[in-house]
Every structure is written in structure tokens, then in C-alpha cells.
Length: 500
Image 1 (cartoon, rainbow, N blue to C red):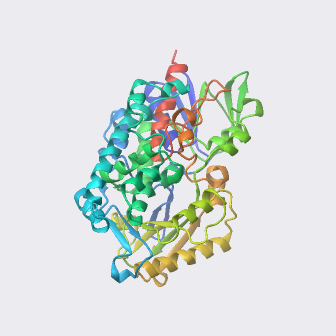
Image 2: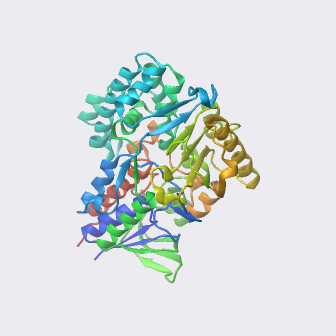
Image 3: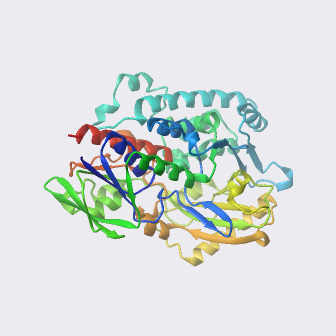
């Protein structure tokens, strides 16, 4: 029986392990940390539970597809519920009691149209047309790109693509398409925010990715009961039921090669020091694997090439517990009260800490009471930031004070006196815990020339039995795409390293 070793138990690694074990391979997953899920990590303290990483459960149909592929039902592992309202956005142009400094986006599409119409005459109907066009792009992407491996640029050129080239707006920017349809800055920001999940910004992202607006308004925002920690535990349970073995607290320190093939891995951790393998799936950070686990002759991507790539931002996260309910906020809440372009210029251009950052709140206890003691709230605050910055305690305190001041002023909530727990995570921890390149939270950005064939391949060009899964490779960034990346890596192995 051929043995496949998976490096890392993130979404991509668990997914690949499950598909390969189901196909009959012997599969072992080595994870350097003590938990499953990679960035989908859980913090439990003083009765609070926080998802430390992913917090948006989008594309529920694709999550269900993964479980169906495994011959089981997602409902037998965890339930999901629609988040309503989908999210709330605070702006900075008026006082909280005037209610014009905020927009609440309902889950119901007709009500969401009415919200748009209230800010811009005709915007409700234009939103319907815009989301319908986004749906067409989504269906095109899912059928033509997302579940495909790419070996050459010609794999991207097919009759379906050529037929739909103009309709999918591949050469137009995300921002230009939104600005053509909507003029009110509040509405534009609502439609642009999903780009953050792509690890990019609207002016540089192809308009084909307005498919994200269909995911938002069409498929909806959901919450998995038990949080993302339950999602990855469920996936692990399924993979184990297929025969995959998980080994935690064991770090892969080197991939050993003979000629053009990998044959073993050096390990550091809980007892095992070496593992033999017929094939390897690396779900660890792609840059880390190339630069730290392989010798120079076997690296497919040069350091200079990585330097030319656009990486998704890092984050400054705060996990905060409050001893009372927070009625003026929502499960998902954005604060877009400062200059959008200045923030992203600091992230992608000047690569410095922003003066007045945008930020996002996740308060799962509003939907799932098990996340906090009765009458309490669990809040996760996320501030996007540039890669590789100094994130010492002084920086963390400074931005926490800025964020709390703005949150209190704009929402009218009195928060500081109710705070009973706080923990922080940022660039340093992402580097230490995930070997994340310069602390990136989302991997490689989803720009035009980092899409499909132009993303790093999920098979090494130098080591014939080394494969990749995760948010650096196809199909893209995010939890759902990482799940699919595991399937694509498994498909390659089944084709190129078939069972005897």
C-alpha cells in the first residue's frame, strides 16, 4: 500500500487526507501544533470560546459537497444556521442616535434591496441585477475553474472561457464594476469588503470576483454551531473513519530526496523522528516548505519570485470577553469610518501600520450562546495590517485603545468597564505557530495573475511526488477553497501515483 504523508492539519491537509484514505492510500498527517485545523484554532478561557481564525461560513453548498463526497451528511456532524442580520456597518458621518452612521444588511434579499434603495434611488433594482450577474460568474467559476488542476496556460483557454470572456469581466477591476453600478460610498464599501477575504483590494482584483457578492447576498452568511473548531473536528473524524492517521505535536523539519523524488521526512516532536513516504502533500505554508524544508536544488519558486508576488495581509486580532450583552452591535460588524484607501495603501503600498485602521468584529455569542457565559459576549476584533511589521506590546495596546474608542463613540456602547477577558494575536504568533510568511493571515492574494494557472502549482516542478494544498495554490484563498485544494491535490496523486 502506498503511503502518503500530509504536512499540516489545516483545511487543505484534512481534506486531502480524507480523499486519499477513501481512495485506499495509507495516509499519515503530521501537525506541528497540538490542535487540528491550522488557523481554525479555538481559544477557550473563563467560559468564553473564540474562533481565533476563520469566522465566515460562506458557500455552505460546497461544505456539504465535501461531506457528500465522503459518503456522509454534514448534518450528522454539525448544524448550521443563517446569520440575520448578515452584518452591520458603522460609518463616521453622524452620531449613533441619528442612525445614519450605520447600515444593517438583512439576510432577506428583498429587505436588503430596500436598504440600498433608501441610500440611493434605483439602487435596490440595480443590486438585483448586480447579484444576478455575480451569480452567473459564480456558476461559471465553479463549473469551469474551481475544481480543476492547471498544467499550462492553455488549460485556461477553452470554449466556455472564450464564450464568456466579456460576461465574466476578467479584465475589468472589481472596483470599477461596482462604481459603474453604485454611487453612494456606503453601498460601494459594502460591496467591496469581500475582497479582504481574497487577500487583495478592489482596485487590483478582477471583476470576475464580484461573484463574492452572490455568495454574500445570494447564498448567505451562515454560522456552524460550535464554531469553526467543530467544522475541522468533524472533518478530522471523517478522515479518521476512512483510515487516515493524525499525529500532533510533531513538526516536519526536512523533506529528504533522492534524485527527483522525495522519499522521507525528518520529524521533531512526539516520539517519531523519520517517516517514509511514496508521496507528500504539503499543507504547510508554501514559502516555508520551499525555503526551509527543501534544499536549494529542489525549490520550484525562487526567493525573487516570491518577492514579486502579492501576499494577503497580516492581522492584529483581539479576543475580548464582556460581562454583559452588546445590543448595538451584530454577529458580524464592520467599522468603515476612516479612509478606506489610506488603510489599504498602508497595507499594500507603504507597508506600515495604518493611522486609523478599518476593523471588523465577530461576536458569535449573539448566535451561539455556548460561546460565552450567560449574559456575556465573546468578541473577536480583526485589524488588517501589512506583513512583517513590529507588533510588540506597545503597538498592540495603542491599536486596542484606538479601536475601543471608535467602537464606543460610533456604536454608543460602553465597553471598557464591561471587559473581563482579553488576549491578542498578530504577526509574531502567525510566524511562530503557522510558519506564515511574514505573518500573512490569508496566504497569497487573489489577483488576476495569481489566479488559476498563475497561482503556484499544487505539484512541485522539481520533486515529482511532492504536492501542495492550502491557500497558496489552486483554487484560492479561504477555508472553502482550501478544502477544495485538498481534493485537487488528491486527484493529482491518484492520477500520477496510482495504487498498485
